[in-house]
Length: 292
Image (cartoon, rainbow, N blue to C red):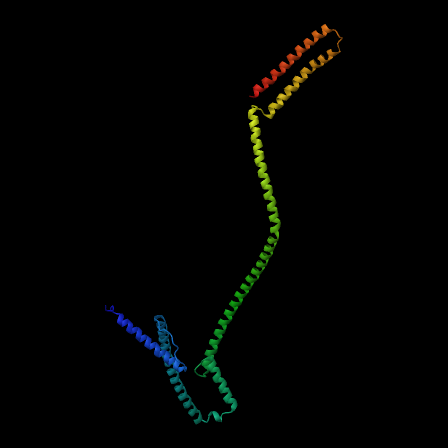
């Protein structure tokens, strides 16, 4: 069975990439005086090393271009320096013939020019460079003032946060100290609640029992306290009316021992007493009937 189209080109590309990676590793380790370590060329490792190889070659090309440019500029600077030296020697201003203080001043001037990153030592160039430095100094001072202001605000926030944290820690410690007494009080309340719940059940049972008793005896809501008070007042009135009769009956106890007269008197008083009791019962019955 033949391989699918493109498999041969893919395998050839992988082989070429492995060959490039091997040559690049051999060159790099050879420059360091070492041998390439043995490892397995997997697709992942080859792809990673090939990407490193590509990046390295691109950077080498860029470095080579920069080096060539620097060498060209160095050659131009050396040529220009030789020409300036010839001009100075022709007018009697060779470096060897100048006083040491003049050479030192010129060297300081050159160092300042290099520090300010200017191409010549003209006064205008120095003034422009100093103006640029002043502007940058102003910008730096503004940034510094802004940073100091922000730092002050952050410091204020930090102090407030520390104060708040201290307060919260103190509050937490106080709450932790209050936990045991509160737990004991809660346990006490829980116990009292259980007792009160048991009492509530007991009182509800007693109330139900009392209602059953009242229903058995024929209690109705119309028998109110006012009705009972009114009945009691009627009873007092009847007691006041029957009291003279009772006193009369007691007075007959002091009569002479005449049996016939005493028997007649006693019978009469009994009838009066029975009539009074009947009247009292009638009044009570009428009062109850009225309440119903």
